[in-house]
Amino acid sequence: MRCAPRHVGAARCARAFTLMELLVVVAMISLFVAIGFPTINAMTSGTSEASAENAVQMSVKAARAYARQPQAFTTRSYEGAAALFTPSNEIRMVRSIERRDAKKDELVKNGGGGVLSLAFSPYEDIPDREYIDLPPDVIVVGISRVDPDGLVLLAPPFAVRFDPRGQLVVRLNLSSDQKDNVLYDANGDGWFTQGSTRRTITGGYDPDDWNAILKPSLAKRGDGTYQLPFELIEPVAGVIIVSEPAFRGARDSSNNPLTLEADTALQADGINTAARDWILANGKTILINRHSGVVSDR
Image 1 (cartoon, helix red, strand yellow):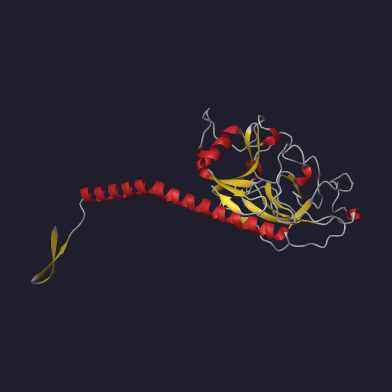
Image 2 (image 1 turned 90 degrees about the vertical axis):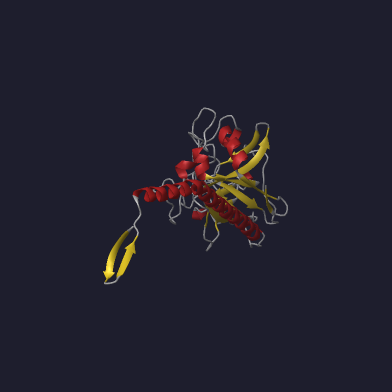
């Protein structure tokens, strides 16, 4: 304690921190930060996953509502609408479009000049409908089917698709029933490519290569939106949401980082077994009722 005269007959006393007291305060602050940081991280992650869940539910309801709106088609039947999930964590609302005059080269096989097969359902973005952005720190995968190898999960792109009656379109086998896919103009060139541009692309499929969050310089389409890796996009029966930082920090049994790349042990390029098992154990599952479109989670 040190006292200094303020004026005659009075004194002003000022107390300064000693070095020991300052070190104690710094140590206490460091301790509080160390204790609270994991909690803050968990709260932030939980908030992101809850936000993603709300976005998924909203997009599924919107897709079903659009699918049930009557369309005045003259040259082909109306196939409904879908919520299309991309590797860049966005959800695009798309709808079935009518077959137009093939002379305009609008709905023909890319580069081939032939009319698009009736087995395929072309889709386009719903006009004036903004994309729904998911939080960048979550990963969303699609639940495709159950087969002898177990549950098959798909990395984006995939679609939650509804027919005109509002019923969910699902398939039991990815290698068949291609007509149930959403055929989407992935690069925005005005052509629809059937048959060759599906998930089993040459060299395999790594969704990170098409993630604009990880690769901001990713090529864009003519309308300024990001390209997708292929045009035949599979419908799913639900999605699973996981924390992106937690997934990137996880390791497989050989201590290798997890990835969403395909596992050749699974047909039709579902994500690899190690990543699938980790996601099933740590993710939030959202299932969609096939007949009512009701979203439920577990």
